[in-house]
Length: 466
Ligand SMILES: [Zn+2]
Image 1 (tube, rainbow, N blue to C red):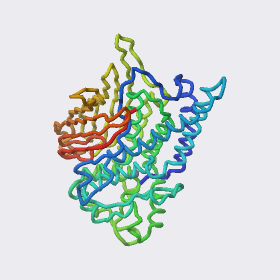
Image 2: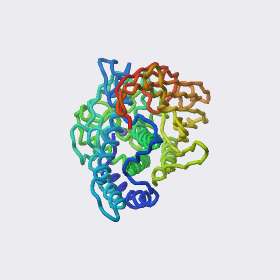
Image 3: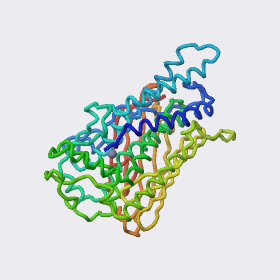
Image 4: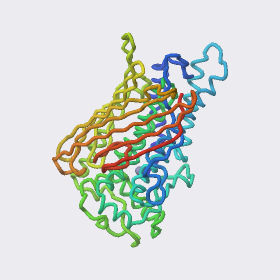
């Protein structure tokens, strides 16, 4: 569920106008139009069409995967924001050209993001699709209510889910059931990181700042909202409105009361939630009053940790530093907090570019109930290679971690894991490329990877470069 979107939108809009726009305008001295710098290398900015295997062929065909919806939403914002920015550069405004172009771009992008947030392909769509992907992975069917196109809906549900499927999911895959509730904001957080990475490595200036604020404040206030009796009032209201009609019910209600509840009770059968107040079906939604004091304390800690997501230089338009060595080194650094299947992670993101080497490094500090664990992921992005007259770009990822054994919240035992991924793009022109990729990973939670188990995945597709 995306919770109570309207007040969050207004709140985000005000905060952004007060801080984001003003500060970015002052801090960002570069013109908004793309900078045609001959030093800039080719970077893939959009994966247009992909086939994700085995996801797309499992359970009679499932779409979109986490990767596919992320690529679609990132493409939606990159294209729209770039087009809006480009539009205003077509007019010569005279003496204050750059200032007027920037102001008009900021206003138009902000209005665009506010008015499209609940449309297919935009942010709320991605949020729901990531919930759906977790269910699709186990063959559970659902419907994304975004397609009803109700722009002012009080909440948007993932509906048409069968109670029996939720019972089975919790019984057979309790860690995935926990992941299911946090997957929505996981997708949104990955969207921000992807747009930031694309801008950093391709040196594009697409104006995404309002979206960054919108997503980060929305996630923060959604997690905060789990700690109040207001959840109970809204839950009663939804339960009454939805009545005996199981099909219209959301799969979970408030994402984070459900997340913290299942995290603390992995062995409890789903049926223990009881019977729906209407007498038909199970009572899926977890209220604040259903939580123990331990669960409330843990959720309150998550709300506080969400503030770490604001420690991000991009929010105030800072694109990073530059060390003027013989080959200049560019860098940026941000922090992130995400909920996981076993607890949470606090991540450090390091963006590095030197010569042809684009490196994105994530240091993880994972936490469950007992202790902390560590992990490191290094991505080499779009490294150019020539191989028998083919122009190639190579993207590779290596990860290693310790995470709680069996993804358990209560264990103090660690299990070692890792992943290796390789994706090769063959450039067809300056604009187009085709790609082939594969990934092997061991047991573990990785942001944006549907499987908590060992997995071997492959994808092929068409991409656009800058
Ligand atoms: Zn949700």
